[in-house]
Image (tube, rainbow, N blue to C red; front, top):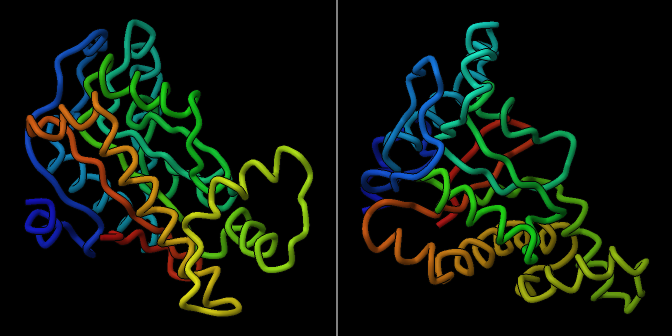
Length: 228
């Protein structure tokens, strides 16, 4: 179902299923046009990324009326788990505005309890119908993890934690820069699969209320594309 939907999303960005979980709070004072299904959310992200890479950004939902409406609540239509890299801000990459996206960022999209809790809050409490794990070309965290494994070098304490979490995704079928590049995609798959196995999220996926997908941002083309 996800692959079939992806075929209809512009530039092959993403894809998915049905309606979101009802939860609190879901209704801003002034209604905004929000996607309410995984498929609709993916379509909107694809359209936004197309605007971004063709330099036709709209910078939507920034007006004073929107800011005021969001004081009383939020209804983001997608949650993006991305890297901390300063070149990949989700709101810009997908040309979205205030209240549109919930963003969680950690180096290399690494999961810990705080990240998992943040994602669970977005899905279970706000009824977000789409979670996107967004990796990117030339990820420094992935490069550090690959370097540490290859050389045996011990990184500074907290950076070593990140490298250790990425280590299972290291792609040993490649060498040099190709290994880093392949590991970026492998890390997205690893994190996406782990999230999809989380009991609460898996129940929402099984009910057609949530899609958890992997994607990758290419710095040289600004394209976001699906990672299967």
